[in-house]
Length: 317
Figure 1: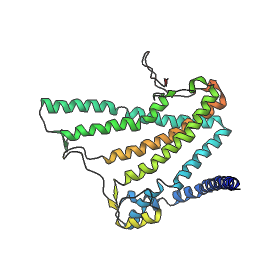
Figure 2: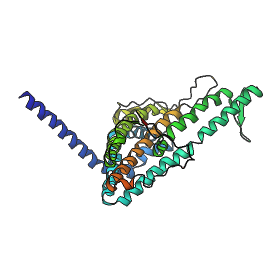
Figure 3: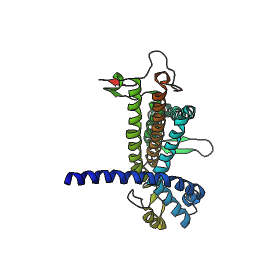
Figure 4: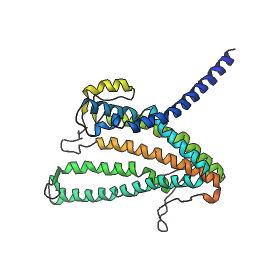
């Protein structure tokens, strides 16, 4: 009897979860329509006139940015594209090319931050060791002047840009290290099934989970009273009465880099790019599974390297 009750309770919980998912997918269309038809309810803060409406709008934006409603709007959009792709491979390939093109474009642009980082480090060494200057002034007319230590600490921002904004670009290029125990030994279709499973049950859930905390972590360094991931919409609207901008400007040294809130923004942007790339990887894997081995690498825009410069795309043990 106890085993039967436990089994019934388990299947009841599964059934309740599926009903909850279906209900939220159905509500996603209404939520998206309401958000698009009432944009000022959550975007009024962009003008920021310090009114009650502005304060409530920023709190709605904070809440819905990591809410169940927003997740299901995005997830429903993902399902809609996939269902359309079941009917038209051409449409789904076009989606893959757009999403991978976004990763490549962003990555190729911000990869130049590595060169800027090197040049700035050279400038710092020259200003400190040769010209013995305590500060650096850049610009014409109204120059930007900061202490040398400010520019030295700012180098970390360029490094963060390369890591956060070039991560999905590196994924598209096959440049991430990959521990391969089974993958290389299985057939093409099994590989694509593994890829689909990984993108759907690892990339998307992990990106979603980290986003929920990174989103509030970012806003906790931009406004006060500080929002919490456990706060409901009603509680955040109550906090809106006292909300004001309080952007983090504390450096590790008195004259050091003081825009560390940019690192929090980069974390959220990185997770958004990972989520989008998970879509692209799932769609590509499905199409390559459906069309067969001859479609492997189809429309894949990878950089052309000289002989001997090919990246290692995995490591075998």
